Amino acid sequence: MAFDRGLEERLYEHFSNRYDLAVRKMFGGLCFSLSDHMCCVIIGDKLMARVGPENYSDCLTKPYTTEMDFTGKPVKGLIYILPDGFESDSGLAHWVNICINFVDSLPPKQPKKSKYNKLL
Image (cartoon, rainbow, N blue to C red; front, side):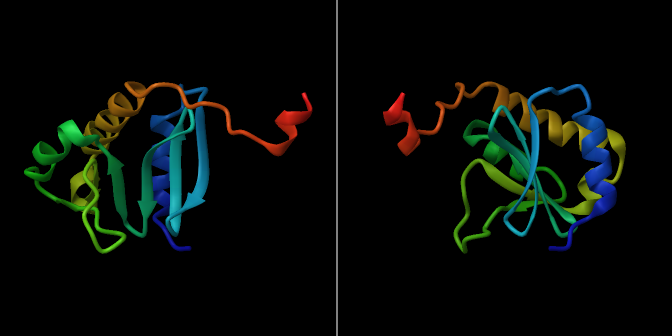
């Protein structure tokens, strides 16, 4: 699993005030989640951004963006941002803030059911 360690550090700085941050390996990269909702993922040297369906078309008109087609088919609401699109701190903040705003608008996730819940 190879991904941009410098971008990892920059994202940790950006999320430093979030108590609900979880980071885990996913999609062959490193996923940053807020309140159990995927926010963005470092895949190689690209940033996969969860911008949401409403922002999707507009975000794809911006420079250094492409459709997220990890599965071979574009997924509406997710885009790739190429390294030139987040080279500056303000560029990274722009994209990460779009992701945060979308993820913060989602309803809380329900607790996962377990076979042990039946015992309680």
